[in-house]
Image 1 (cartoon, rainbow, N blue to C red):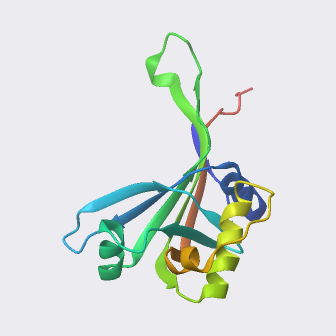
Image 2: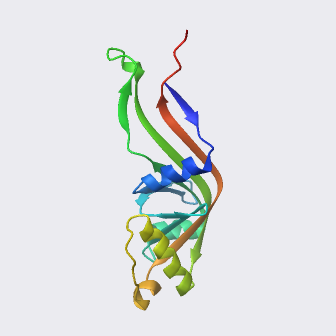
Image 3: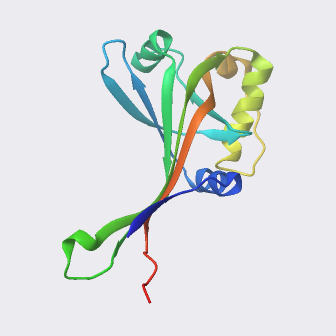
Length: 159
């Protein structure tokens, strides 16, 4: 089985939309990696996240705002031959976006961004109190590089 690269924007958006969690990777200034699962929103090539206004993750990003965000579809075990262990793979698709974090502080922009986040999970409309908007950290990650792949694709049969 093989891995293929995907470059079609609509396919990339579809993969991201099918995910319910993304994984945010950061590195502290001493190089220590830290990866956390997060809820997200995605719109026009931008990943939006939200978090508490302070903590270890915020401390890291304030020192080093370079991040990567990984999305992966549900995986399924597949094989080419049931008795050959090396022929087993997990069939899935993934998107990795590298970029820099900017924090959004404007209250109106926070509200718009929370609507983008909630649209990933629900068609409902939401209202946000001013204290809630003031107390949430909103992340904006514009991708500088993107990789999208499909894993465990079958090889074409030879004639």
